[in-house]
Image (cartoon, rainbow, N blue to C red; front, side, top):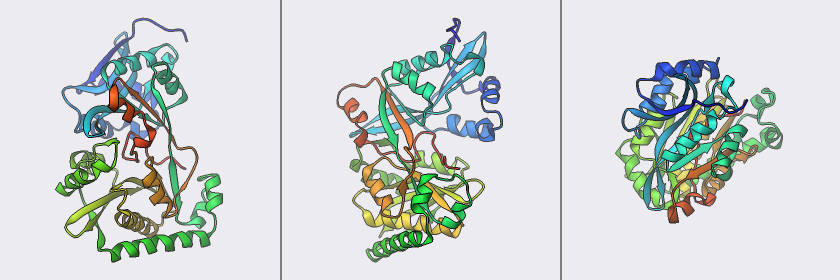
Length: 359
């Protein structure tokens, strides 16, 4: 389709959700989660980083009707020792009748003029072409890691995990990984580390953040405010594990069982990268609980090399290329250099709008 005139791009106001519904119903027919008003309200209106009546959702109108959206989830990003406002992209959508007409480009041009930092995971080829034209940085892939828990059940799920399933096939191998994971947990326990369930993130989460943030150069600010919104208010039925050494909380892990059962998703894991005992105990306990629930395999995303090494020690292996990662920024100087350095980043399933993707 040729480019058309008369495209008006504005930010959606908090009371304009009804005017967005026709576009969402057209683009997400049959996908109840995407059409859920409760989900939309949580993701955008209840986001603790949202400020003012204008949402961080840009919409394109033609003749008054909304024909495209570029919503983002505002967040606070730690870069070096400083904090910056940033935007994680989600749900880029253009009405089928207007795709290829310039609506998508106009939306992204507007976002780029207002947002100093734009971040996106798992973008489509069409979106990546727009980002390339705007000069955004291609950051490669955030690896997807999978841990097989029950190869017997896994074999019944045709196509699940593809080649990875073949590499991990065999109950003996899985039992070996289970033993190794359990052994690491025993060693951690012997060092005075213990794990327990938590219903929410309290003052301990803020204290943990202050202790560990200096270990990572670039990451979303994981304080109690963000974590409670992300996990306890999201209605995703997440389970929170906290590891403690004496009175101090030294790490946490969040996981959930994917709707329909049989699959687990390790959403977030945080601790000091050199605190192997805390990380080992969290991973081992999560795997133990997921196996008890009859989960066949567990999936996660992890970009930071120290975190990936720890997960691999418990039997997680890479599956496929992962999800794409792209950064757009108007910052300069040291902050820009840090932001565009792939090795500086800490990313898990808590970031952006990614979730379990295997079938």
